[in-house]
Image (cartoon, rainbow, N blue to C red; front, side):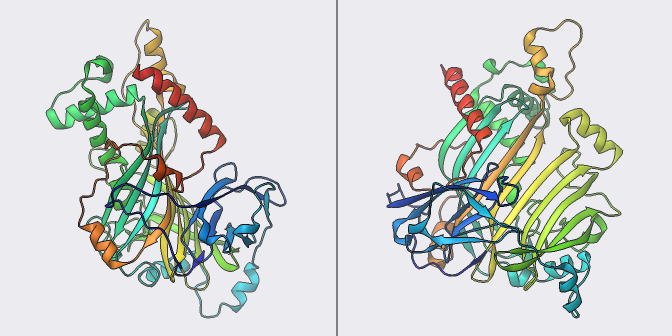
Length: 475
């Protein structure tokens, strides 16, 4: 999406105390494919010339809060491969579905005129990586966002946290993100934790690696372990596997950390990936390459300490703008490839897909900023436990595939970019805490004026169930 400087905005930085109300207009609707009438997921919904926006959920639905001062501005709804929908906010209709028509460029026609341009998928991706220095931010910035972190088995949610966060990035992508990124949890909206099995597994693993105590989860009882000890062990496990810091600073932040040592999209990118040009689509009136990500000669690995996180094959798609080679979106997953990883994945997770990632970017002042991140990975739960002989109902439930195999989903929506260097520095001088377990009072006014991700219908039902079970659990 092409964005230009905002004319005015309400800035809520985590270093400020409290929050304040702003007159808002609520826009909500459903976006569907004109031909199939199927919902369009992850369509961009934003106010032109601002960073105010959201995306559609799995049902094609969205809700967007817009300050009243923007009521004469234009709302744009776009999705790769479709013609965009535009109207002014004061003319927006919440009643009728928004229909997007397919919009595809001619690949043959494009290639004929592309005399001095890369023509293969590999060459296009390499050109895009060369252009990152021009297309990524050049100055430090802050982004405000919303995260929904959930864990579930095949039946129900076991853990849910929803928070408002601030991301600081000093934009020095050439040196990697490990020492140049910070995340702060500003506010917490929901926090439910019913992960009995996972908590025990994390606690047993924590004891093994930090206290040289080797206990099996089945020999532990949650009600005999201090809550603070469980939280400490879960935080430790999340930090080494899939915590907020890992998500932003690790290898799977593919574009931002492409200059980090052993980066997945680093100098040996073609040894682990092959890219095949599929077609050319249109995104908000701009041509965009659609390129398939495929396996290469080497397996992909993540080098996770204490975990065999190797032996993968990369699959997915990457979307790159025709005009400036900016990366708009990446759909990336790691599938078990080696025999050892195939066996491990089947036994521990009951799936061959170990990491699933979607990252989309917004264009603001000719630079690309993260807009939406979706990350999914299976969880290690009750590892190594096999019931022997007669077992009770509780043990049977733990071994049941529907109960036993968990996965984690993290969704992050960024809705505001702050570039003012005085504000950036003021925020940087404060204490930063990426701990989603931090106890924070619920601020009703803050959340009434903050854009969040709309739950899907399935998620909404599961969240209501989790809320009910959590209330009973606490009694």
